[in-house]
Length: 79
Image (cartoon, rainbow, N blue to C red):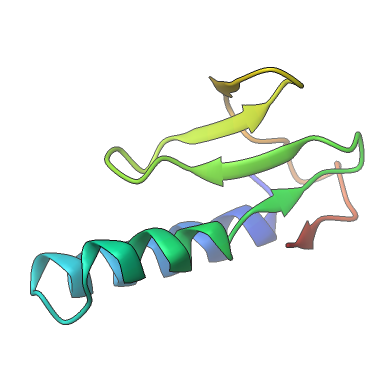
């Protein structure tokens, strides 16, 4: 898995813990997750599912659960 995806997973875990401990509201949790979206070199947007932490990419119509790109797929940007 690409380093950027691992960093987002780590941040997700911190945010989820803060939400569970009621340090942040559900709205704040969701808003922060939206800031963690990534875009791969194929132009696909990726994000972690709020409830599961699993990865999803947008296929142009819907969010589809999938494994994120591996290390060789470079040039990811946070949006």
